[in-house]
Image 1 (cartoon, rainbow, N blue to C red):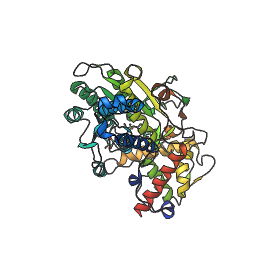
Image 2 (cartoon, rainbow, N blue to C red):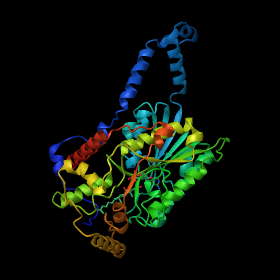
Image 3 (cartoon, rainbow, N blue to C red):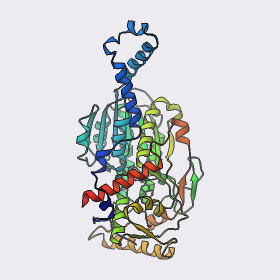
Image 4 (cartoon, rainbow, N blue to C red):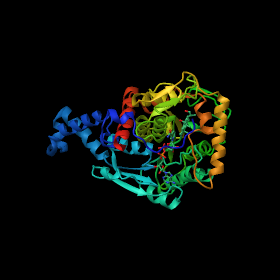
Length: 438
Ligand SMILES: NC(=O)C1=CN([C@@H]2O[C@H](COP(=O)(O)OP(=O)(O)OC[C@H]3O[C@@H](n4cnc5c(N)ncnc54)[C@H](O)[C@@H]3O)[C@@H](O)[C@H]2O)C=CC1
Ligand SMILES: C[C@@H](CO)CCC[C@@H](C)[C@H]1CC[C@H]2[C@@H]3[C@H](O)CC4=CC(=O)CC[C@]4(C)[C@H]3CC[C@]12C
């Protein structure tokens, strides 16, 4: 059951499909919309040298379209966005989604501790892409990156529930890093800040209370001891409290926070780890959690889309959206953590053994505690960070699901990807990942 994070072995996935990496084929259903729009633009641009006000006025309806077009162009390609953590799992999807779905973008700044080589391919497009290698814990680096940006999407964070980093480091990156982002906005005059929070700021709590299909207003006793949820909760609070502060130039800062549930999709490291764990176990995984325990999941493309939309609409509806929190949701089915993963791992040849947990819960807890002890004992020699520890077991074993339409009501969010698309894309990525590694 307990396993270390994986090394790679070839698996059944790769034997079926030989594809290039998922990055090469990245596109979204909404692209059709942008293409239609582009076609429309081309159509209008046939009259390109006739775009003078007098003639426009005499052409009746067409003139009105042209005027609108001119107004749109004046608005177009004006904005500078900064995405912190833009090279992470979610950050990369946000970056690509912005490039495809935000026509007003002039410059996109991508700030990350580690820059990915894939950024190079983005630099050939019409939007200026600026890669900034930097650390959110360094206030001066953040301020330099934020200066002149209209919108900041702050996704950078230390996501660690496995004990790889110290509590102090998690706090430094997630809390101090967020403080630095807020102060940079205030000092340099950036007015819009979107923060990637987490469902974990709510729960599951340490008492294991279920949160069953709850929404942003559902009462829940949020009690945190683990450094990751504590840090995310504190950072979210700081972001929301900063809403309304005056930024340089006198305008109010407008902030909001998005709370994804467990994100899945192309690039998801934990899914990768579980896949290789299954391969090492001869193509089997052993059920540890009852199928009745629901765990909320959301597709990364939809989370990215929500970031793009919220950033756009925050500028239009600051009074409604400023200081608000929104769960990230889509049409992914409610299932247990393990059953949900099987939606992707199954088509890759893995099998989940058992209709009920194979081990009693007390034994799992014992194994989890043993892992925690081993981690502590081995720490001077090596990093032992298995998936199973008392915290992750409690997470997987506590119902936490969301049912809300707040994002739809406040800013017209509808998922861009259906469940079928999200599933297919994730399976394709797993298959491509495996075949490219063989
Ligand atoms: N993965 C998930 O299921 C969920 C993630 N989130 C949140 O979404 C955000 C992104 O998470 P993931 O993409 O999953 O994680 P990730 O680890 O793939 O991405 C985080 C990015 O932040 C960067 N980063 C870390 N420390 C930094 C620092 N000091 N300075 C600058 N950049 C730094 C990393 O290099 C990485 O590229 C995080 O804020 C996380 O708390 C929220 C809910 C669920
Ligand atoms: C007990 C094991 C038997 O199969 C499985 C252990 C699974 C855990 C590693 C995961 C279960 C729940 C996950 C977390 C959850 O989806 C919410 C999260 C939100 C975040 O903001 C970051 C990631 C995570 C903490 C996620 C991490 C992995 C699990 C604990």
